[in-house]
Length: 438
Image 1: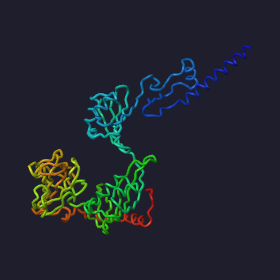
Image 2 (image 1 turned 90 degrees about the vertical axis):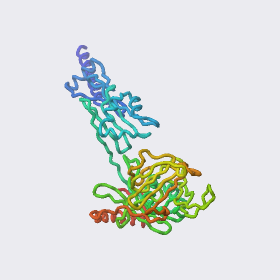
Image 3 (image 1 turned 180 degrees about the horizontal axis):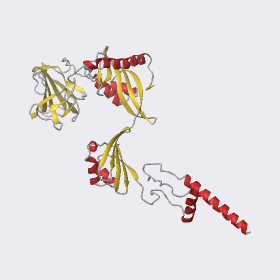
Image 4 (image 1 turned 180 degrees about the vertical axis):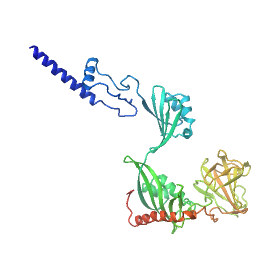
């Protein structure tokens, strides 16, 4: 009987060790960044001895603690809401303005001045001690900041690499470019870029006709099998009123991207045809127009673009502001001089853009003000004038000087790159697939 009891105790002891070791080997690990991480210390004892100790002292919880009972780092995620600021988000996450200041004082931290609803931030900490902070600009780009033991902060940019798929589309316009694009499930952002590429050659409000066609080859971006956005337009053709306009993307040796025709001439012109996103032309260029208020023949030396109050107005070209003022007939207005030959005028603004003043240099496409109805205006619109050597010209028909072509030393490189895009583009025109992996 005594031997039976000894044998029974040995069997129970062995089973206990096996069960405890089994549970120890399959110890669960955290599955979410919002759960605490567990640091596994190096084992200094044999598994059998550890199992015996566990059996004597009872199992120890490792969720939210290390084996030496220190609190492990935890991570929490905050989303940027409407009206949020960095200060408010840090306070909501339980961290101090001092910790925020340490981050924003770094060179990379200055990029945190602009945050938008929907973006996310990750805080990793031990209690109230912030160890790491990540700002996720989008699915591909994030800024990561680490607090060092000496109190300094080190920042780095992290970029995930998306898989690119090339998509080819052909559309025949019935009403508008946007309605046709939407019917083809082309992203609105791609449609906007397409209009921007051809905006110097085609007025997408006034020039479009039913039967016009476009062909476009662009990139879509995928991350972990999920579509997260789109990349560049690689090549595009537009047929407007029977006239074909072709473009191709070129990336020069410094990494700068732009669009050119097949001869290497920039798609850009020195000036925009229409420096505002307008709904209609309320009054055209007409030197014999009858004035709507005074019922007398008075020349209309510009074009009136009707648009909602507050619509951004863009500088038609690079230049220097010579006037940013206000008077009775013009309301708030801006005059820009572009070199020796050209002057553009923008009248009836509701307000000027920040920093726009006399002597300020502006770039083409820069916002200089906003549509309004100041001065002698019957409704919100932009009155836009274009002068060549002091003479008013019709902004819609005046010949515009070209922007800079491809540099001579890169012309051969451009032709090789353009040829690759165009060969693929022409092949897809003949046999258009829905999508093609890159």
